[in-house]
Length: 130
Image (cartoon, rainbow, N blue to C red; front, side, top):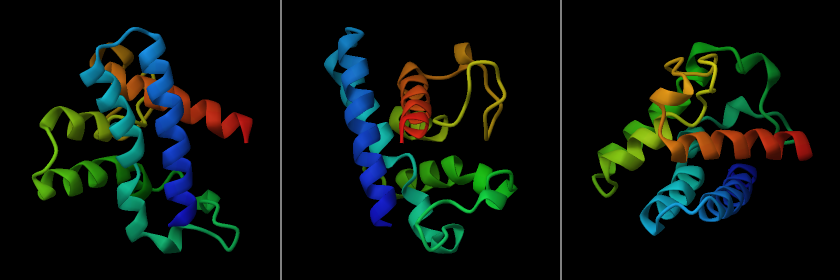
């Protein structure tokens, strides 16, 4: 869980910085940061998905259960009743890709929230740079 929370904090900082530098309004910048911070909240319930080094097990990446974790995270936030629907939707879209090859819905860029697109690209950047 610690590895997830540390990565989420880094992702939130990077995503918020990008949103701010793009000139997004303060509500959107905040929503972008919160989306990044909360996007993998459901993974805390799946400790068995990680190996002893705290890396995601490679065989899980293509599994239906893993590919639905953004929806699971969104449902968890919705159930709490403390988050706006727009944030819940953004969290559910963070693994979508511009060409529609992402998951869980296979949405293209024009069908996803800008906040989600920023988080998705930030996540790719962090993965490539670490």
